[in-house]
Length: 52
Image (cartoon, rainbow, N blue to C red; front, side, top):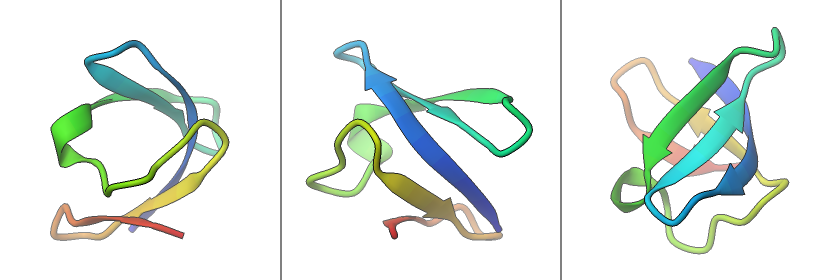
């Protein structure tokens, strides 16, 4: 399981950061509805993404 903070959105990807300051680009269509900058998301071990 991985917890990430949504930093911003460039129109195609959400740019997220983990606690070790590693960045991830997640396609918009894979994110839960209603995710905004500053939200925390959780990625489960099977790849499911949920808003905390």
